[in-house]
Image (cartoon, rainbow, N blue to C red; front, side):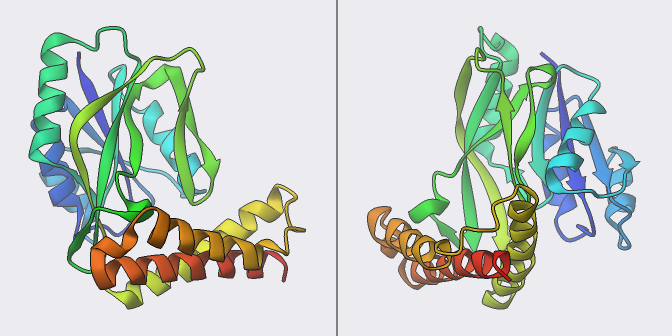
Length: 247
């Protein structure tokens, strides 16, 4: 069982070395699909032995579907540049390579997100299960940009690996707000493209449901102030997306 790691990048010099180092012990090749970074992302990747390919960015979903086609091996492990395998997840993948997939065509993992230096273990942010290891020809990336997901054939058998995928997501509140403004614009544009521009009432219902679900029902309050800030700003992101949708 040989595995190709595929990572899409743009100006990720602060993250890429950590990401690559985490997959080197378990992957048989590492492919970086870069969208013309202007920093040292490509230089660092090449120094670490990665194969670097340049491709214009047309959207997260499109870029990840392009990346998987460059994989030499049938099994693909897909990561974002700000993610890394935990030691436990590395061991799970090593054990899988030893014994084989045993009838599975894909595997999910739990993603553990870091927010302002704190690991978040409640709310909508954990276990944040993601399908990240799969047979290349058994599915494709889909969803609504920028929120992509890998969707396999209905008949595919999917297992789960022990260990966390570490996500070094947001370092400051200011960074979080910048991401919200960027992604809400992308999300609104994607909904408009699908003809869903008439959902004006979701500007009010979606934020309320998001906050109650994340902070109360999913116990985001157990993460303290970080849990409140995540829930509040996530609700604001919903409001902003639907506000832009109806403008």
